[in-house]
Image (cartoon, rainbow, N blue to C red; front, side, top):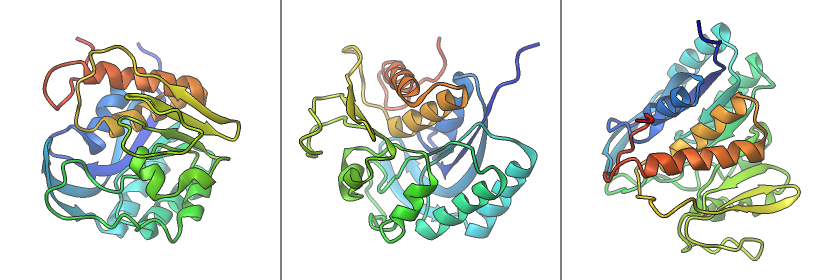
Length: 252
């Protein structure tokens, strides 16, 4: 009989292609030896290279499903992804704190979906209550554009994993930007995580994979830096798993 795995919860959207959202999160959780549970925040009309529309799950439905999980299980980490606005996010965070105030929360502040060719989301939808949200989570995983648009430079006391990726966005003098380089931002300053190898092939949902892998490693007891290094390695393996935009999560 195997050992009991720590529980991770994904609170995120449903992507029918399985490349992003709760499906990608659960795949990552399971591969990294945690037990994955999920609460769906929305349904999306998309495939790996085309995003048309989002249909938001009503707040009361999200909270009811989340409460059932929080009553039954003790999560070791929670990842939050695509969510409608700050009102819903704060309600979700309040519900988590009500039942498990000490559980680590990783927030991936998704402002816009990749390959968006349809409905445009309001990128300022978290701005009004941003500080309250930041105070309630433990780790943020913005990509470079999200870091700039949310003005996260002022949150140096928080743990940030900034997905550098490409170099179009200027992050500031503290960041020595390079293709494939990510950054860890804490109260101690900025550390860089370099690209791993040359076989990286772009994949749909790498941001979701990174944040869920980070949550899984946190749930297993790794500190922020070690969890981040391992999460980046996990994403690299998924990105080099095949030539399509959809990653294989198994190790075969």
